[in-house]
Amino acid sequence: MTRTSSRKLDHLRICATGDVERGRTGFDDVHLVHEALPECTMDGIDISTSFLGHRLASPLFIAGMTGGHPETEEINRRVASAAEHFGMGMGVGSQRAALENRELEDSFTIVRETAPHAFLCANLGIVQLRDHGIEWAERAVEMIDAQALVIHLNFLQEAIQPEGNHNAIGCLDALQGLCREYRVPVIVKETGAGISGPTARKILGAGAKAIDIGGSGGTSWAAVEVLRAPKAASARTGHHFLEWGIPTVVSLIEVAETGAPVIATGGVRTGIDIAKSLALGATLAGMALPLFRAGMKDTETLFNTIEGLHQQLRVAMFLTGSRVVQELRRSRPRLTGPTRQMLESIREESNGY
Ligand SMILES: Cc1cc2nc3c(=O)[nH]c(=O)nc-3n(C[C@H](O)[C@H](O)[C@H](O)COP(=O)(O)O)c2cc1C
Image 1 (cartoon, rainbow, N blue to C red):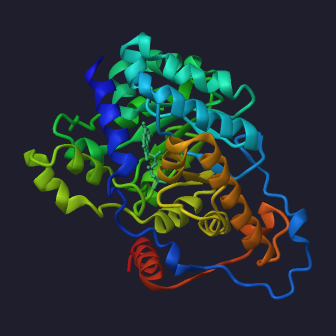
Image 2 (cartoon, rainbow, N blue to C red):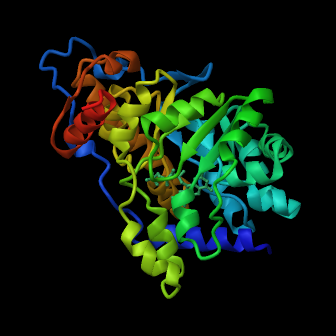
């Protein structure tokens, strides 16, 4: 087994039971406005939506998580069966381990076998893209016959991981080179530390077609790395970065202002969080940890979790008088507290104080 593969298994074991959620998403500061006279029927509410030209039956996106170790094949099969059943989009975890060792490809190919009709996203780290070029990107997409390629950014994790890669030079150029010639849309994704408005503009300028903000307030990869190597010197540093990053709501609002399609991921935990994300301009809301933990139990638990989230979303749409997702987007939620203050300070700064 390669080091990448056994590290992946460490990460999944820690995420299965560890205390890995840190920070504040800002969803508590977002208030959907109750409509006392909704003038629609709850059972007729349509939660389907479009993303990058694909019709999806749900705005809930299964964020990239697993694959890359033989033990991950079963969880990927369960999650893919949910994507197929509910008509949801799904990302796989980093395909690096299978690109290094073809024997691990089955843990990813199971996803397309189980979900022949799903909108699937391949996944590669920006450092691997820079170091191995478009050939790895192409192999990752082919492996699962993906409709889009996610390039993930995880420099918080790299900085805290004892064996992490600390060199981020040349990544934007590598992204630009990929987007210029690539046949499927490229989505750039953070993994829990968020993306600012100016960085989003650089990413879109390089040619990415959508952004998954991966904001702070949900799974913290600093926390995962501290739990993985608690005695390493890097863990002492990591403790100071447990809450590092741009809160999901702040990142979402900043990035949505670019007009590009946005996936809101990072601490989305309820159907109301999904509704708030859509109301704030997200095209999809992504979720990782809760779906991973449900899927680790069994398929039934995973399906029940997703049905529950959809039902909460429908109730939130009904109570805001939103018959379709587009109407939710026009619902103008109210913002309060630290999230409002942070956004005001960002706006003051961009206006030159
Ligand atoms: C178990 C697990 C494994 C993950 N593996 C990957 C990965 O391989 N590639 C990636 O881009 N993101 C990965 N992520 C990050 C998620 O896609 C997501 O951005 C992050 O966890 C925040 O969402 P959450 O708060 O809902 O967990 C992983 C998350 C979890 C929980």
